[in-house]
Length: 269
Length: 305
Image 1: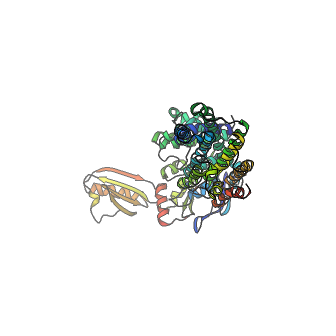
Image 2 (image 1 turned 135 degrees about the horizontal axis):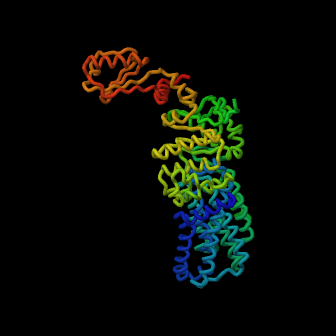
Image 3 (image 1 turned 90 degrees about the vertical axis):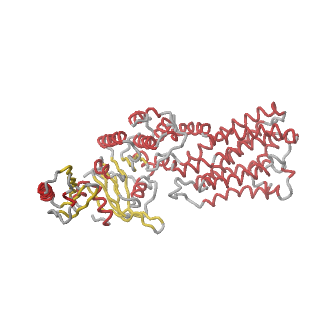
């Protein structure tokens, strides 16, 4: 078994062994899904038509925004990355392997939600599986990039929570998960386009459920893809092995550049 | 003489305005156990971590087995083994997984035998956070030596270890030395440094205060031999008694302690005095100056080469 495969296997086991990661990867999104299925479909039957993408997006946000950054910051603060550096673990492995394992956990949760929601709650399944898969992969990639970037630029775990919540909470309120995009007040709808969740819901509606897009869905995929690439690029560029001995290549504020594709998207889509 | 395993030439390290290490130079020969000593803040960790490639020097040149630790970090990784003072692994990694994980990155077979040898046989399935501090340090040591590094850096290796493990560690260090490993040992334990090191360097406020074999460094000091005496009737406690060649006299815990420049006349005079006072000897100890004594002398006087 190669070092990379060995690392990947260990990291995957960590996602199940670590109680916080188990919560963020599985228990929180699946618990929320069951609660929303039981309550929201009764209160607001229209919620049912986008319940699957909304819960899949929620699972992605929970795993990537709440689960992914904190272990990176904690590991750097605890000196684990120093041990890794001394033993030749490449920085690309440190960043990419948690992403791959998180995406794997997200796939499992997405399969559970997509397979059980029509049976348990009578909500519609995707009509275009290729579009569903494509949107899921792009959204997972983008959010994983953001999660890793937050982990890289945050000076402490407390700062991590602030950055994560800055994306997670607005995504819940404005991202189209609970409230459709077309019901948002003028101006707020444009602000919501700063969030990957808004673009993901837009693309899911158009490409997976034939519900019609609120704005250019292909543009949404492109914005998310470019945002993801930029996030990973910045994370690799700004990566620092050691919290005590700054060896990073740039100021963490550069991480804010990741918002650029979303700003451009507001004007073009 | 062989090419040095480690070469440090005019190494300088600064943090903002603070000069942590100022133009120090020393070599470590192959198969040598080299002690790096100094009080907190002396520059030991800066020196070690720069040699390990974790920090960049602000001046001078450093080489480890001919490799520049800053610019050739990939080459360095398989040449060195490091037990960090505050090494840490992911909480949920098991002992076996850690061995497999790091050995895989060094492209060598996992050395589970080292785990058995360092008393971790019962803990191989335990997660890192379930290990005691001593067990964590033993695991860090096993990981540091698993790929047979040419140079091994040990930072406070015996801190938190019980006596048996400490003896085992010292035995392992001797074995590694015999098989060609060069060892740099940073420690606050002077007895350990004196016992294990072929040579030591004492750092003080970022400068090299002394370097050489422990016995030579000890000999460079004031050369005062410590004579501790305890008697039944405390006849030595009377005021005004003086003995030949005594530079300093202390009284501590029923013992009279004399620091002598010439041990023969001092001990003879003390025994004569006790007999003349019809007192009886309970205990008499003669101790040559230790590395610790010399270290304290250097650190309190500011040091001299």
